Image (tube, rainbow, N blue to C red):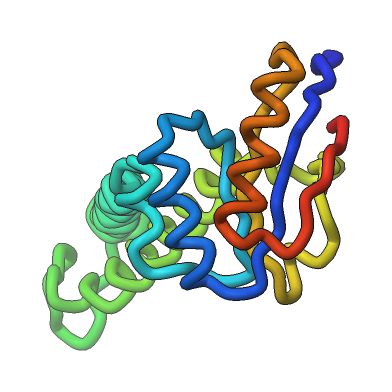
Length: 176
């Protein structure tokens, strides 16, 4: 499956406060930000970009509930139908004895399910190579990127002017 190449115009910032101010300026100028890249989470950036809260916790709850049911129903089946043995005078169906294993399977299913879901959503499957705009973004630079694939030269100049006015330390263009 081939993906169309994009022309990306991006600016690098040295500080997260400069980045936050630049995002505010871009929003005020009605510029359509493609993405923002940071080496660590920046507090307050999500609302400025209009990003909704992640729903990964809902998936975690569902995976945990599946784990709870799987463990409890499996132990119920094993100890009442498949292999009914009385341990130390306890009944076949001893719910308090099921609690530790049920808890562990719940945690295991929730954590593994959330990791797989996160990797799937983010496109980080094994063998996939994600294009990187600049290697310094993962180290010490902050980046605002604009998709200028179908933009006219006047629009590109407007974005370059925005980067200059907002204090970007570097402005680059890359096809990804």
